[in-house]
Length: 362
Image 1 (cartoon, rainbow, N blue to C red):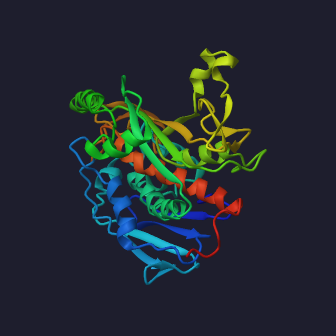
Image 2 (image 1 turned 135 degrees about the vertical axis):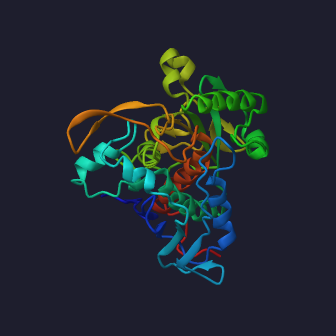
Image 3 (image 1 turned 45 degrees about the horizontal axis):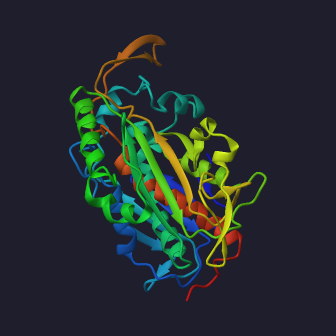
């Protein structure tokens, strides 16, 4: 398994959905960064289910710091963070362990690991492991804040409902005002109706999350293979349920001419900037000083209560499966802080490679 990501700011994920705990080891964080348990807990709490459209699995997710932070400051040693799993119910999974759930990684994990994988709750392929991502993201965000970089994400689409475009300041002030983390209150109400309808039918829906990194300096990225887009895409695809990504104008650029999609350069306050940001802040795999903007597609939650066709891996016969348990009708709102975390972790790594984050803070 490849459970680590990053070159100089590295995170290693560990744990399974129904194992004893999930957590993360962070290596490469400078010494002296002021960070408290509350700073990390605040981010982890954002990932928790907050409404009746979310799973009823209620984990306290109390963060424990095992190493690397002493007296409110990072020591420069590897940081180990975890939360214990205390509300796992594996009984449902025992009943269907030979029936791979459509849309899940049950079958591929079974093949890859010869049936020795922990299938309970999806094991390593569960969204539960993203608690570790968010813990690491809290450290990365604090580190980026020390050099003026800010990360924010919001829900822009669920089902067929699209939110109106919002500027960063609007997103900052409104994104936490509703459980869907949508900066457009009117659209959020329509989105909730779509989710509730799917839930009542035993089904689920997906959506799109936009993530923005502000004040990213020009020059981050290591072409040709370690491009900023490439590493950001890799980080985003480590999030279960992500099935697509675009930067800047993305797929809509195919409907534009070059004269419309190019971003003209100009001088603003003595610095090079662009009049538009169709490139999403990246050119040639390197940040250009504009906000880095990406969007990720989150597929509908595959765990649904509608009966589905599958196979029985023990008897090698066709079968059906009904998934009973505690699942989200829409995972998009809970994925927002996870997307932020992976953006922060990746940019942190590139900032260290560029030498703009010192080895000692303060």
